[in-house]
Length: 364
Image (cartoon, rainbow, N blue to C red; front, side, top):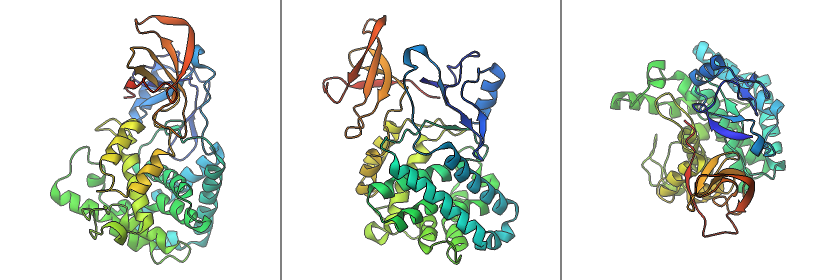
């Protein structure tokens, strides 16, 4: 399979990986032959890239770190919860104090943590495409996924991993109380609008902190995920160790997902591009410990991505090196003269240090 920008996909291409709706159900399944109508619909739903079947790379298997049933259950609970709070904001206390909700949330996120812990693969962020109408749903799921992986990577206890996992899922719940015209504005906010947007951290904290079935540290994830290492964040301008470790962790995963997510007003970055931005703020905006842990957890170059080397050769990412995430294995398909090879070969950049990736296919 090969990862392609949806702009380069053509009617007749065969989908190699399913596309999910924001509630976790399969929108378009593996093996479906795409039509122009489908492609137009997916573009309208903010899908920027697809895995397409390709005979030269059909042996590339993109593994997901959590199973489809677990993904569906996690996305469904956040979709249903956020929808309920949005439609009945005056009943948010009743929704979160429901013991069945707390029990279901813990069960789902414990399953996510168990599957992530059992996985030995680097997390491929583009393995599962999700069509969304409401960015908050998929952003919250992604932050929960990345945060859980970081909690496991940094050797948190089982209890702490579950708290981080639930905290990631609910870190943006306060945005449900921010006016839609601000939340969905396709451009820069005015200073007054931004002040209102920043209130979501306090709203989320107040919504979660008194709920018996939701750990208090989950509320602090909502409260502190916009605090920054140098004290330039909000809402309290905490700095360094004044910020709880969960807040420092979630600051990294929240920004990373924001950078890599495709939005109406700007395309998402590739993982290695987003990591460069995080590292530029490491030790200043972000706790370096969590930036480095994220780098070592994800696949910086997604499998199936087309890349160009400094030699002029082009190929496709076929594997990642967990100890050297910036040096993946590439299948060379086209030589330095632009000629397709009759016998493609694989090149492990961790063993050929003179070779470098100088360009990647744009996935916009």
